[in-house]
Amino acid sequence: MIVEQSKQIVAEVGKAFIGKNEIVEKVLMTIYAGGHVLLQDCPGVGKTTLALAFSRVLGLQQKRIQFTTDTMPSDITGFTVFNRETNRFEYQNGAADCQLLLADEINRTSPKTQAALLEAMEEHNVTVDGITHPLPSPFVCIATQNPLGAAGTQPLPESQLDRFMVCLTIGYPSRENQISILNAQRYQNPLNGLNRIASAENVMEVQQYLSSVRAADAVLDYAVRLCEATREHSMVELGISPRGIAAVVRMARASAILRERNYVIPEDVQAVFVDVCAHRLVMRPQARVEGVSAADVLNEILHKVQPTAALHGV
Image (tube, rainbow, N blue to C red; front, top):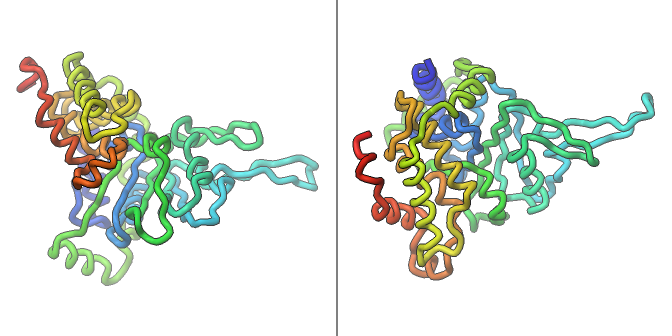
């Protein structure tokens, strides 16, 4: 049931986001794992289209906020206004009051506004004037950002980067896929033709089922050893935190679900390790000088740290 529905979701989103089913699967796994997605790439490759397609196919209430230099924290959290008719202060919802929040170009706004997302992403609440307001369930944030160095961008703080379960790079489509995209856009916006495959209730059921997916202690030990190796690497200033390890395990469970298994194997951990961990590493200046990226370090660790012999072929 879950696997069949997931295939239908990937196929339906693929009608608007053409030729990148691997990216679509990873975003769906992140939603199943109860995490948030950071899409980082140059303008025009479909980051916003991907987020909008998921909101329509999953039947989630969606809001979008376009970050600019003058975006205020209250635009996200909401604010209170005085109603003269009732003689009371009333709370007005912000952009975060939805099930899927598209935070577009998140690295174009001020750190203060970026920080306003922290509570919403971690606690699924927003606090305004000392009063906490719960957000709808499920709550998923899909944020996009342009590469650092683009005009008007500034880096996200490490504390906020750590709240994103994965950071994905889409890349340019192939020549054949670019032709398919042009043909799909000939008569209408492909987003308008998408069908709703699932609902918010379906998403929450999968998120609850995730905890029943078994992960043997040996698999957990393998995930921990991989993450611990990042803390000891000579090119890494700050390695993976316990929150990062938990994210690897949750994503590995989601990977197992999509592979029609109710247990996690080392290949699930390996499949999600780079996407979950690359944006969490703080590299030393020497790494930048030598052209060593976080992904290079993680792939090196995957090669060096092997699962125990008993886990091979599980």
